[in-house]
Image (tube, rainbow, N blue to C red; front, side, top):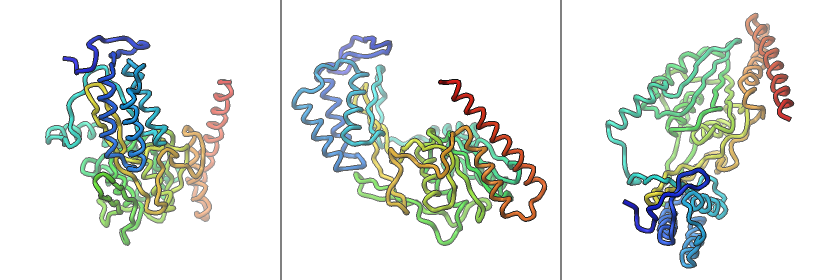
Length: 358
């Protein structure tokens, strides 16, 4: 059954499955966007966007657009121009979307399945290792909720407890649970006094949610030793929050490239059978800066290609240790020499590869 206002005829648009839109269907989508913007994280911008959309509705706008894909792209471009928010986006689906309520919560069975799938990925704690020279290495592909990943994180922190510096690799981490961010920060900061990490403002709900470090963690804290965080363009949302927070607290050195620039939380909003939008509904506010990294991304302290970030961090950590370890022990000296040679070779290889692309 085809929803009123949309042609039952499927079309092919540039090799993509599409549908034909008429004025009624375009108006329906525009009206749904205007209503959804009531929950947007920035009310003043929402009011301007709503006024623009309603004016277009009155003028019968977009009359020349009959492609679903083109309509979504056009709306996205205009919303992002009005808001300067690259997370605000409209999507098109040629197949009908399921009916989902914004207040829908997962069932017990769905939660059990999510935990099972997370467990099969080791809760996105991908690699834990002692590197040469006694530096710890922790690679996270995501921030799974503490109720899933808390015990595994504690085990990882036990593994690196006696190292003399810690490298946390978030280069390929797309984010996840803010609660897991607070938990991992808690391992790296003293238990008392508690540290205020950030707030999330939810304007539509007129409430603010605070994030603080925890007085108790289920493993050894990692204190008074250097921490290096690896970041890159694929580092997003909660992973960015972790890096940004530690940078502002001067608890970590960031190495790599600028991150994705996705700070503000939100949710998908169904507009009709074939259109939905991602709508940021909250605003993250860092406790130190009073701001966040939306659009700009988190900037590294040392900008290096992501391919070299781990080796650079390893070399920096060993160099720092060598200055503090007098006399230098045999393992540290050998590791420093080896890693320096490896880094030099990787730099030469990267230069050669870039030269070959010209």
